[in-house]
Length: 227
Image (cartoon, rainbow, N blue to C red; front, side, top):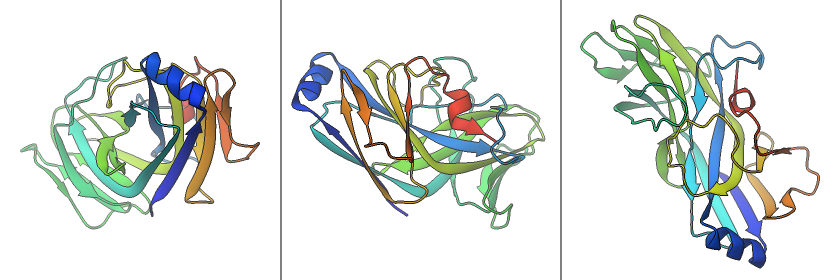
């Protein structure tokens, strides 16, 4: 399914954002297994900058898809690190990927329902996560540790976080704190959402239950990662 997010900005906001070298950032929420009805806990994982958009216009529409890749990385999970995707394989919910002792990444047909999983047959620890298509680009949006001979389980959700902040953080960066005012948007009941942003008064979604403001300085791990 294709989902669409339209963000409307006032002319004053567009001028201010571009003049002050600000960017729009998108993040995506994920669940890690074993799953426990949304219980908190990040399992050592972290959200990544999924998309960064500069040169902002008065109306911006972004699309994202359900297509997924499982990726593997040697980047250590630490604040502000930029995760470099070393290998990736097409996957879908219900499939399990295998990293064999020859360090080859392959996907199998069968797996756990509604889950993208990775089994590590290697003796080495890796970082891993999911990539998802955003604006026609496959990009990583989360990262987790995967120890030798362990199994990781992830499931994307239909919630994304949009925020505006200084254009200083590249896509794939580990971000622990909201560095600007954000809006958590739920696409569960609809494929299209429309919101507005003003640089002084913040986000507006006309009181919709599917959107929740996220103040600058909020911790992103507990907000975007759950079981």
